[in-house]
Image 1: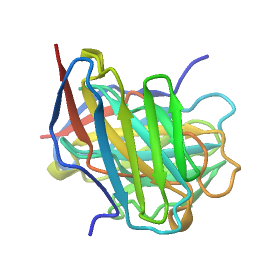
Image 2: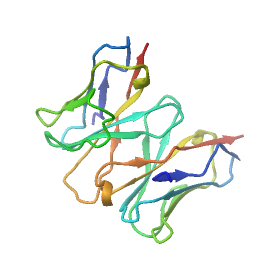
Image 3: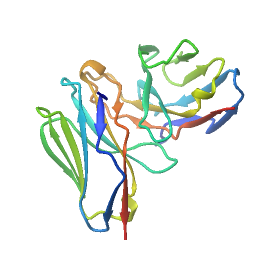
Length: 117
Length: 112
């Protein structure tokens, strides 16, 4: 079946602009996660949705970052007033969800490479 | 102290050798442990998960978990050039619930 998809694959924007990154999870997966990966580092957690609600948004770096998942499927990560330091690969993952203790396997999408000039 | 630390690389092994990758974690109540492989420019791909103390084998891969020592490792037997990638250790559960906390990754190169 289809895996996690993300659009766009690449996004170049100018400092101060607004961007939206989209994630389409695996069908039937109720949990969705956003991570950010800088060069030479492991992915860094941003936010986790269980269904439509954000179960944990402790990784969002500041109030310029916001994410939604209005129908419990597709999610959009929104970044306002972009800064050069926001440049990274933004990864989305999904899992079946509904388990305790975080034993779900997370499947990653191909990522969106964001470059802020 | 980082929450998840991996042995510093890069690690270079000859084809056919055993590659050993190590990881320690700080959250004692973590419950789930994963090894992801990431090729350059690609997204992480799950290769092993382990939840209980001991060894878990899958083909050429063996994951080892020791919760008392807060240590997890990955052994790759009969290493192949196609195994050359960055290996990411990830931990979940406990106080971090569903989110994965990753180490910085170890670059493995298998040379012919």
